[in-house]
Amino acid sequence: PRIAVLASGRGSNLQAVLDAIAAGALAGEVVGVFSDKPSAPALQRVPQALRWSAAAKTYSDRDAFDADLAAAVAAVRPDWVLCAGYMRILGGAFVERFRGRMINIHPSLLPKYRGLHTHARALADGESEHGCSVHFVIPELDAGAVIAQAVVPVRGGDDAEALAARVLAVEHPLLLAVMRLAVGGRLAEHGATVTLDGH
Ligand code: GRF
Image (cartoon, rainbow, N blue to C red):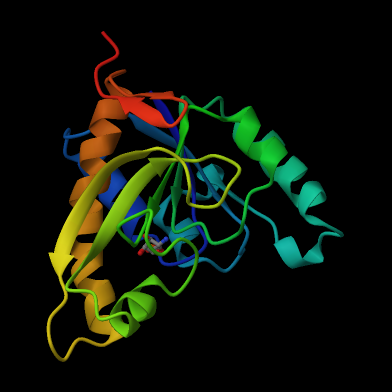
């Protein structure tokens, strides 16, 4: 299976996928990495031929950027589109085009804390548990059907950075577990619910 990855930043989740493929632990191929930030470190994790980026801020509007991004992603003929630290909101037309084969990893226990600054918000609320979710992408931000979650404790003395690091450590294995289901053809979106065995 062909995997396209959208990333805006560091790319540690992308690296986890690349490492798993290299180790024979994930039967897929990363066929492109796409970014709204030409300087994103994530891009450096793959050979140049697999990189696509454009500075979103140079476009007149969201639809214009999304159209270029969609064309580039479609050109690599992905079976799965993985948003891994992709920080720009995707418009409805983009999402519908890849609906059912696009997933996102989000650093909160959805439906809690959609959007940004999840760790700081969880701390401010005095949560005792926090974590991350992998979900299908729908036009509404961070609102698609949840596939799997990983939970970590919030500890006294945590700041947002410490909590983010604890969550990130479980993001990578969670994402790989879901990607194994996806590339195995065992993962499907049915509206608001998910089936874990397509057979
Ligand atoms: C992760 O915490 C991801 O859940 C969030 O942004 C961060 C990206 O990290 N959306 P990386 O770029 O994969 O290292």
